[in-house]
Image (cartoon, rainbow, N blue to C red; front, side):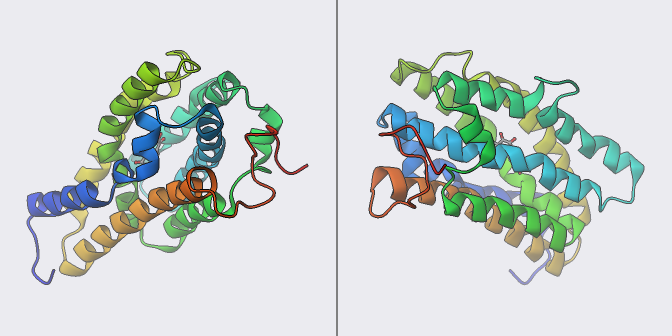
Length: 248
Ligand SMILES: O=C(O)c1cc(C(=O)O)c2c(n1)C(=O)C(=O)c1cc(C(=O)O)[nH]c1-2
Protein backbone atom coordinates (compact mmCIF):
# COMPACT_ATOMS: atom_id res chain seq x y z
CA UNK A 1 0.00 0.00 0.00
CA UNK A 2 1.71 3.19 -1.13
CA UNK A 3 -1.18 5.53 -1.92
CA UNK A 4 -3.36 7.33 0.57
CA UNK A 5 -6.68 5.55 0.98
CA UNK A 6 -9.95 7.35 1.56
CA UNK A 7 -11.40 6.70 5.04
CA UNK A 8 -13.88 4.23 3.54
CA UNK A 9 -11.13 2.43 1.62
CA UNK A 10 -9.18 2.16 4.84
CA UNK A 11 -12.22 0.64 6.56
CA UNK A 12 -12.62 -1.82 3.69
CA UNK A 13 -8.95 -2.83 3.99
CA UNK A 14 -9.34 -3.35 7.75
CA UNK A 15 -12.47 -5.46 7.25
CA UNK A 16 -10.77 -7.53 4.56
CA UNK A 17 -7.91 -8.23 6.95
CA UNK A 18 -10.36 -9.33 9.64
CA UNK A 19 -12.12 -11.66 7.22
CA UNK A 20 -8.79 -13.39 6.61
CA UNK A 21 -7.10 -13.32 10.00
CA UNK A 22 -9.70 -12.99 12.76
CA UNK A 23 -9.78 -15.83 15.29
CA UNK A 24 -13.15 -17.10 14.04
CA UNK A 25 -11.04 -18.85 11.37
CA UNK A 26 -8.98 -20.77 13.92
CA UNK A 27 -9.58 -24.55 14.08
CA UNK A 28 -9.88 -24.43 17.87
CA UNK A 29 -12.86 -22.06 17.63
CA UNK A 30 -14.46 -24.17 14.94
CA UNK A 31 -14.22 -27.17 17.28
CA UNK A 32 -15.46 -25.17 20.29
CA UNK A 33 -18.48 -23.77 18.47
CA UNK A 34 -19.56 -27.01 16.85
CA UNK A 35 -19.56 -29.10 20.02
CA UNK A 36 -16.50 -31.14 19.15
CA UNK A 37 -14.55 -30.44 22.34
CA UNK A 38 -14.99 -32.29 25.61
CA UNK A 39 -15.60 -30.61 28.94
CA UNK A 40 -11.90 -30.62 29.85
CA UNK A 41 -10.99 -28.82 26.63
CA UNK A 42 -13.73 -26.23 27.17
CA UNK A 43 -12.45 -25.76 30.72
CA UNK A 44 -8.93 -25.20 29.37
CA UNK A 45 -10.30 -22.55 26.97
CA UNK A 46 -12.19 -20.69 29.73
CA UNK A 47 -9.27 -20.87 32.15
CA UNK A 48 -6.76 -19.56 29.62
CA UNK A 49 -9.07 -16.89 28.32
CA UNK A 50 -9.45 -15.53 31.81
CA UNK A 51 -5.94 -14.10 31.36
CA UNK A 52 -7.22 -12.06 28.39
CA UNK A 53 -10.23 -10.89 30.39
CA UNK A 54 -8.08 -9.99 33.40
CA UNK A 55 -5.66 -7.95 31.29
CA UNK A 56 -8.15 -6.04 29.09
CA UNK A 57 -8.68 -3.33 31.74
CA UNK A 58 -4.90 -3.12 32.28
CA UNK A 59 -4.53 -2.60 28.55
CA UNK A 60 -7.28 0.05 28.51
CA UNK A 61 -5.78 1.79 31.54
CA UNK A 62 -2.46 1.99 29.66
CA UNK A 63 -4.29 3.58 26.72
CA UNK A 64 -6.20 5.95 29.00
CA UNK A 65 -2.94 7.04 30.62
CA UNK A 66 -1.75 8.25 27.23
CA UNK A 67 -4.86 10.21 26.31
CA UNK A 68 -4.42 13.95 26.82
CA UNK A 69 -7.99 14.83 25.91
CA UNK A 70 -10.56 14.55 28.75
CA UNK A 71 -13.37 14.01 26.23
CA UNK A 72 -11.53 11.01 24.80
CA UNK A 73 -10.76 9.64 28.27
CA UNK A 74 -14.42 9.97 29.24
CA UNK A 75 -15.36 7.68 26.37
CA UNK A 76 -12.51 5.20 26.78
CA UNK A 77 -12.94 4.79 30.55
CA UNK A 78 -16.29 3.07 29.93
CA UNK A 79 -14.34 0.03 28.73
CA UNK A 80 -12.71 -0.32 32.14
CA UNK A 81 -16.08 0.05 33.87
CA UNK A 82 -17.55 -2.64 31.60
CA UNK A 83 -14.94 -5.15 32.72
CA UNK A 84 -14.43 -4.12 36.34
CA UNK A 85 -18.03 -3.09 37.14
CA UNK A 86 -18.71 -0.34 39.65
CA UNK A 87 -19.17 -2.67 42.61
CA UNK A 88 -17.84 -5.99 43.77
CA UNK A 89 -19.28 -8.88 41.79
CA UNK A 90 -20.26 -6.73 38.77
CA UNK A 91 -18.68 -6.39 35.34
CA UNK A 92 -17.13 -8.61 32.74
CA UNK A 93 -14.37 -10.11 34.86
CA UNK A 94 -16.90 -11.24 37.48
CA UNK A 95 -19.11 -12.62 34.72
CA UNK A 96 -16.20 -14.57 33.25
CA UNK A 97 -15.64 -16.10 36.68
CA UNK A 98 -19.31 -17.19 36.69
CA UNK A 99 -18.49 -19.09 33.53
CA UNK A 100 -15.40 -20.75 35.01
CA UNK A 101 -17.44 -21.56 38.17
CA UNK A 102 -20.19 -23.08 36.04
CA UNK A 103 -17.56 -25.23 34.35
CA UNK A 104 -16.48 -26.48 37.76
CA UNK A 105 -13.04 -24.86 37.73
CA UNK A 106 -11.42 -23.98 41.00
CA UNK A 107 -11.51 -20.18 41.39
CA UNK A 108 -8.13 -19.87 42.97
CA UNK A 109 -6.56 -21.87 40.15
CA UNK A 110 -8.24 -19.58 37.60
CA UNK A 111 -7.49 -16.24 39.26
CA UNK A 112 -3.93 -17.09 40.26
CA UNK A 113 -2.97 -17.85 36.67
CA UNK A 114 -0.82 -20.75 37.85
CA UNK A 115 -2.33 -23.25 35.39
CA UNK A 116 -2.04 -21.01 32.33
CA UNK A 117 -0.21 -22.03 29.21
CA UNK A 118 2.88 -19.86 28.72
CA UNK A 119 1.74 -19.01 25.19
CA UNK A 120 -1.46 -17.46 26.55
CA UNK A 121 0.46 -15.29 28.95
CA UNK A 122 2.94 -14.16 26.32
CA UNK A 123 0.27 -13.28 23.77
CA UNK A 124 -1.87 -11.33 26.22
CA UNK A 125 1.05 -9.45 27.68
CA UNK A 126 2.34 -8.57 24.22
CA UNK A 127 -0.97 -6.75 23.73
CA UNK A 128 -0.44 -4.62 26.85
CA UNK A 129 3.12 -3.84 25.79
CA UNK A 130 2.00 -2.93 22.29
CA UNK A 131 -0.43 -0.27 23.48
CA UNK A 132 2.17 1.13 25.87
CA UNK A 133 4.93 1.34 23.27
CA UNK A 134 3.17 2.41 20.10
CA UNK A 135 1.35 5.61 19.16
CA UNK A 136 -2.13 6.27 20.52
CA UNK A 137 -3.49 5.78 17.01
CA UNK A 138 -1.94 2.29 16.81
CA UNK A 139 -3.15 1.46 20.32
CA UNK A 140 -6.72 2.40 19.41
CA UNK A 141 -6.48 0.58 16.08
CA UNK A 142 -5.37 -2.59 17.84
CA UNK A 143 -8.80 -2.82 19.49
CA UNK A 144 -10.48 -3.05 16.09
CA UNK A 145 -10.75 -6.82 16.19
CA UNK A 146 -13.89 -5.98 18.16
CA UNK A 147 -15.49 -5.06 14.84
CA UNK A 148 -15.73 -8.77 14.18
CA UNK A 149 -16.57 -9.91 17.72
CA UNK A 150 -20.40 -9.74 17.65
CA UNK A 151 -20.59 -12.27 14.81
CA UNK A 152 -18.29 -14.80 16.46
CA UNK A 153 -19.96 -14.27 19.85
CA UNK A 154 -23.48 -14.93 18.47
CA UNK A 155 -22.19 -17.98 16.70
CA UNK A 156 -20.37 -19.19 19.82
CA UNK A 157 -23.36 -18.72 22.12
CA UNK A 158 -25.73 -20.57 19.80
CA UNK A 159 -23.23 -23.36 19.14
CA UNK A 160 -22.22 -23.91 22.74
CA UNK A 161 -25.81 -23.90 23.99
CA UNK A 162 -26.88 -26.35 21.33
CA UNK A 163 -23.99 -28.77 21.75
CA UNK A 164 -22.82 -28.84 25.36
CA UNK A 165 -25.12 -30.05 28.10
CA UNK A 166 -22.75 -28.62 30.71
CA UNK A 167 -23.24 -25.03 29.38
CA UNK A 168 -26.27 -22.91 30.28
CA UNK A 169 -27.46 -19.52 29.08
CA UNK A 170 -26.63 -18.06 32.51
CA UNK A 171 -23.06 -19.36 32.28
CA UNK A 172 -22.64 -17.44 29.00
CA UNK A 173 -24.05 -14.13 30.35
CA UNK A 174 -20.64 -12.52 29.78
CA UNK A 175 -21.24 -12.67 26.05
CA UNK A 176 -24.76 -11.16 26.23
CA UNK A 177 -23.20 -7.94 27.48
CA UNK A 178 -20.45 -7.99 24.87
CA UNK A 179 -23.07 -8.03 22.13
CA UNK A 180 -23.94 -4.40 22.95
CA UNK A 181 -20.57 -3.26 24.31
CA UNK A 182 -18.41 -4.43 21.39
CA UNK A 183 -20.36 -2.64 18.61
CA UNK A 184 -20.35 0.61 20.60
CA UNK A 185 -16.60 0.34 21.28
CA UNK A 186 -15.60 -0.67 17.79
CA UNK A 187 -17.77 2.02 16.14
CA UNK A 188 -15.94 4.65 18.17
CA UNK A 189 -12.48 3.18 17.49
CA UNK A 190 -13.20 2.85 13.77
CA UNK A 191 -14.36 6.47 13.53
CA UNK A 192 -11.26 7.63 15.38
CA UNK A 193 -8.96 5.64 13.14
CA UNK A 194 -10.69 6.80 9.94
CA UNK A 195 -10.35 10.41 11.05
CA UNK A 196 -6.78 10.29 12.33
CA UNK A 197 -5.00 7.96 9.92
CA UNK A 198 -4.50 10.75 7.40
CA UNK A 199 -1.12 9.83 5.93
CA UNK A 200 0.06 6.71 4.13
CA UNK A 201 2.40 5.96 7.02
CA UNK A 202 -0.35 6.20 9.62
CA UNK A 203 -2.65 4.04 7.51
CA UNK A 204 0.08 1.42 7.27
CA UNK A 205 0.54 1.57 11.03
CA UNK A 206 -3.19 1.11 11.60
CA UNK A 207 -3.30 -1.93 9.33
CA UNK A 208 -0.20 -3.35 11.03
CA UNK A 209 -1.82 -2.81 14.44
CA UNK A 210 -4.86 -4.86 13.42
CA UNK A 211 -2.57 -7.51 11.96
CA UNK A 212 -0.65 -7.67 15.22
CA UNK A 213 -3.85 -7.96 17.26
CA UNK A 214 -5.24 -10.74 15.09
CA UNK A 215 -1.98 -12.51 15.91
CA UNK A 216 -2.50 -11.96 19.64
CA UNK A 217 -5.90 -13.65 19.45
CA UNK A 218 -4.70 -16.38 17.09
CA UNK A 219 -1.67 -17.26 19.24
CA UNK A 220 -3.89 -17.83 22.26
CA UNK A 221 -5.83 -20.44 20.31
CA UNK A 222 -2.64 -21.99 18.90
CA UNK A 223 -1.45 -22.49 22.47
CA UNK A 224 -4.74 -24.20 23.38
CA UNK A 225 -4.88 -26.27 20.21
CA UNK A 226 -1.42 -27.72 20.56
CA UNK A 227 -1.81 -28.38 24.28
CA UNK A 228 -5.34 -29.81 24.39
CA UNK A 229 -6.43 -30.88 20.91
CA UNK A 230 -3.25 -32.15 19.30
CA UNK A 231 -1.40 -32.82 22.47
CA UNK A 232 2.24 -33.10 21.71
CA UNK A 233 3.99 -31.82 24.75
CA UNK A 234 2.01 -29.74 27.22
CA UNK A 235 3.65 -27.34 29.67
CA UNK A 236 3.87 -29.47 32.83
CA UNK A 237 2.38 -26.78 35.07
CA UNK A 238 -0.67 -26.20 32.85
CA UNK A 239 -4.26 -27.09 33.76
CA UNK A 240 -4.72 -30.85 33.43
CA UNK A 241 -8.31 -31.93 32.66
CA UNK A 242 -7.57 -35.42 34.01
CA UNK A 243 -6.64 -34.25 37.49
CA UNK A 244 -8.50 -30.88 37.36
CA UNK A 245 -5.33 -29.31 38.71
CA UNK A 246 -2.39 -27.22 37.67
CA UNK A 247 0.83 -26.25 39.36
CA UNK A 248 0.64 -26.01 43.12
O1 LIG B 1 -15.18 -13.47 22.32
C1 LIG B 1 -14.45 -13.00 21.46
O2 LIG B 1 -14.18 -13.60 20.41
C2 LIG B 1 -13.86 -11.68 21.74
C3 LIG B 1 -13.00 -11.05 20.86
C4 LIG B 1 -12.44 -9.80 21.21
C5 LIG B 1 -11.58 -9.21 20.20
O3 LIG B 1 -11.90 -9.37 19.01
O4 LIG B 1 -10.56 -8.63 20.51
C6 LIG B 1 -12.74 -9.23 22.45
C7 LIG B 1 -13.66 -9.91 23.26
N1 LIG B 1 -14.20 -11.10 22.91
C8 LIG B 1 -14.07 -9.39 24.53
O5 LIG B 1 -14.90 -10.00 25.20
C9 LIG B 1 -13.54 -8.17 24.99
O6 LIG B 1 -13.88 -7.72 26.08
C10 LIG B 1 -12.59 -7.50 24.20
C11 LIG B 1 -11.88 -6.34 24.43
C12 LIG B 1 -11.07 -6.20 23.34
C13 LIG B 1 -10.07 -5.16 23.08
O7 LIG B 1 -9.21 -5.39 22.22
O8 LIG B 1 -10.10 -4.11 23.74
N2 LIG B 1 -11.28 -7.21 22.46
C14 LIG B 1 -12.21 -8.02 22.96
